[in-house]
Image (cartoon, rainbow, N blue to C red; front, side, top):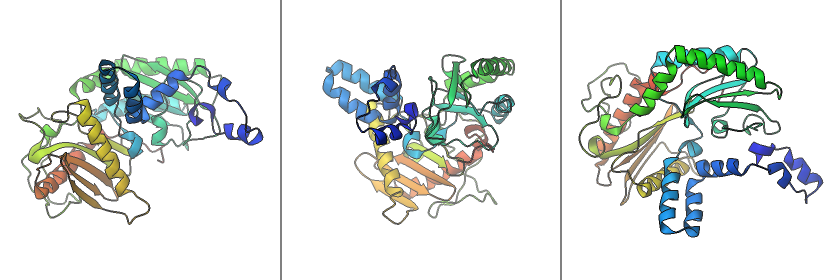
Length: 363
């Protein structure tokens, strides 16, 4: 509601408890449907499964799982994997328009950020990135719950879109000119072709986790448990190995950078390749995250759970959080060792998977 109306609607209800805000929500059905799908997909599935026949329920469920997004409970965003130079090139042109009166400029591919910049002293929260697509005006509650920003959104191809935000309601033509300039530079510098290539290649796969750890001195990285064996640098993501899952029964992981408020998750693949399995995994992660951040209890640093579905391991440090799912028969010691290798792997490719140096954003 705040997204569409701003928090100032509270004043209307304070003055008149019978205030009817229906006229203010005209034409927003698509918006609410999109938000429900992206933020509460499992509730939507449960509701719709009651209403429709079996064949339709299966299609609805498959769609809902296809937009699973851990950003909703991590309060972080994820980036499209790109070469550091490519992301820098995208950021440079976005910064150019940000200096010309645009409050925020965000280039995205589906739900993943390619690059984003903001005007000086302007701060945007990761949660607001989840709620900023395809309509204008728009209220970003974490930025300012009492006012609107004006969003210009233009798709540059089937998956990639540019979002320009301003405080001016009369800036349409200026934002359009900015978009033309940005699109021209992105095409000439091959950024868009690199974005499309990254979409086809996919992100990090557990099958690609380097299997031959070599001792490395002076890495400065924390280690979980007694296993202090960081891996060799993997360079660009490798070709998948044969088999189901990754080494030592690793099925999936999510790594969240505390400092950047960004996360990276491995691609969903076998054996977590059905809608039901993916739904169950994300619910397990959600519960694990909630238990680790329960304000009523003492903060925890690690947690190890084993049930009939998974071995779940969580590790929270001042710099990052790691959530990993393993085969339910996985050995605890090997799982800990593998988590250390995952952390080192992420560290080795952080220039490609994270947006670094976003100084205008004080998350």
